[in-house]
Length: 230
Ligand code: CA
Image (tube, rainbow, N blue to C red; front, side, top):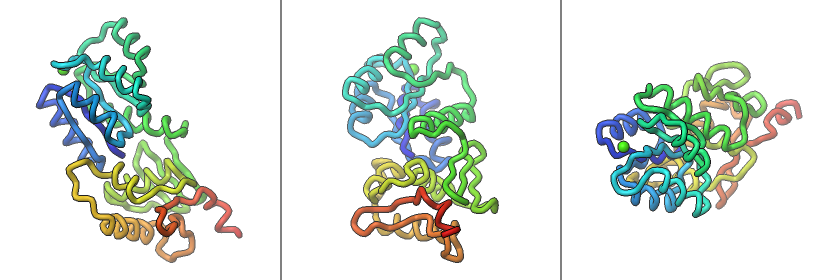
């Protein structure tokens, strides 16, 4: 999952980037509203954290310009301003959720997860396909009720595939949503990681949850429930 952080206070921005990176998320960050407009329009953003008080361009204008360009990723507004009119303005401009400063980092993470899950069309915190289940609030992954231990990156990879289960996800799309712009993008590395994730989820090779579609990408099977009994 790729997060765009727009916050002009250096210490707070670095704190956000650090916490999100530690969660295994790909993070792009800026303190400039103009740069944020560019990044939101050009990068494959899954969710954005947006401060309203920016030095060059107001956060609400940034949001308005993303929405005018048809960029519909969910946006969590961070603001020191708690006045009701500004919340209403933000919601009318197309914000999805609000946090008033100061806030707890755990709350930011929980809100982000909820926004991404809802924008992918899942109402519950539990993502499931057949015996494979992911609880996005506890971040626990189970196969047939047995817990599977994943690294932060493996978790993000599986989360992206589960949020798009049944869809073909190209390697380029996965790379874009799992790594930020600065990362060295090597598709061999992704293949190795997918292989490792497969072995952890399916050590005896019976379930085959992740299909490889040659030249097209990967697909997490949405019909896993039926596969076991067939
Ligand atoms: Ca600010």
